[in-house]
Length: 146
Image (cartoon, rainbow, N blue to C red; front, side, top):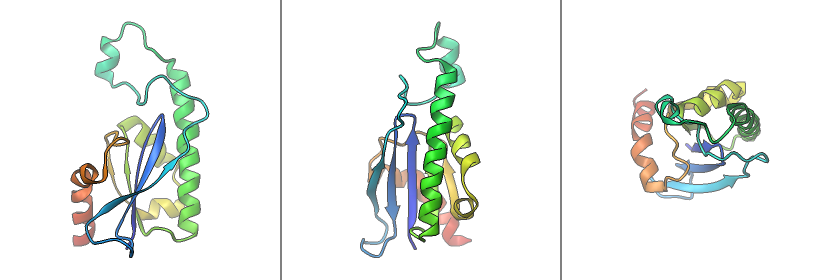
């Protein structure tokens, strides 16, 4: 069974796969980088509420951040739905900071939502394969025991 792990932020998205026939068991492999959003933001993530409380003037217009996030998450959702139609993966794990994750999940198509196995509410865009395993192991174990 192939599981895809998608790690987006406001600057791009990285896709990993786990469990494809060509690889050894228990290995996560980098699959591809999705194109970056056409509109760039100054920050790669939405600032947390605590960070916003400490910022005198935000470096980015929150309206621009939401616009970029909505457009890019819709694009990623469409790409995932196309992959579902082609049966390229059986399950999906999403890893993104909380606000971006909620926008992405909200935009997922029906077929993709059925394959969603879990989420990690952290920006893991820059994580490598071995670091990523630490964050998704519990989701894999829950899925196997179900």
